[in-house]
Image 1: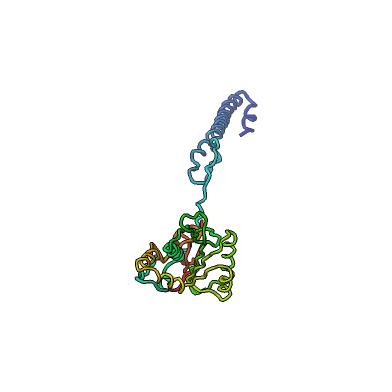
Image 2: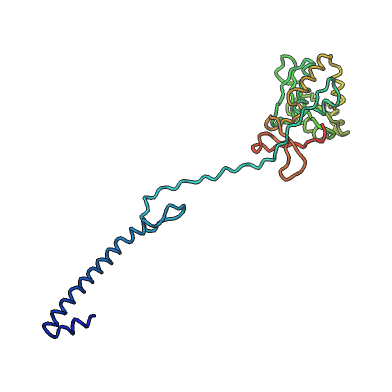
Length: 280
């Protein structure tokens, strides 16, 4: 087609014909250029309109991003402490109507301390007890009437079967000496080893085991004995108290299996636990 106009331009007639043929060709070329230009201008907008960017995590490369904002911080879920499942609360043992070793076996350590405190106040002494926390081997401070300084201190050990050894009695005597006290009472529901009894006798410590405490209770009036029973069976007397928090503990089962135990109700803030006896 490019050679045809040159060939036809050899004569006037052919030249006019060639001119007629040449003019529409340039028009066609111009139209083509305009068409290509329009295509290049409008194609990105059409692609932008047709490209989906509403899918989560999909960005449209042809759309100018909006002004960036500070991304929202994603707060991870609060880590929950691993807590052993609690067991259903067992029914309370039936309270006894008279004193016997079964009473000491049924009550927890904090109730035993309360019984000891009530027992000594029945003798005409005033007392101040340590409800929980670090006690420095002292559970009860005993005072004479109108006295500002204690006349004796009491350590209570609610142990089942395990005897109190000389180590525990020696530590208690150290507390007595630090307060310049000549008298001290060590009370336990269990018994004492021979060397513990010998040390106590030589250092002014009155060692009272379970039978000795029951003998002392038996010397009280029937009304006083009943009052002591009321103290022993007060509240949830069979559930141990956390020595650190002063709250009742819960029966728990280890998450990975094993024997149930008593765990503090403030877990995981407090991880105190006690072994659970097979029978009370």
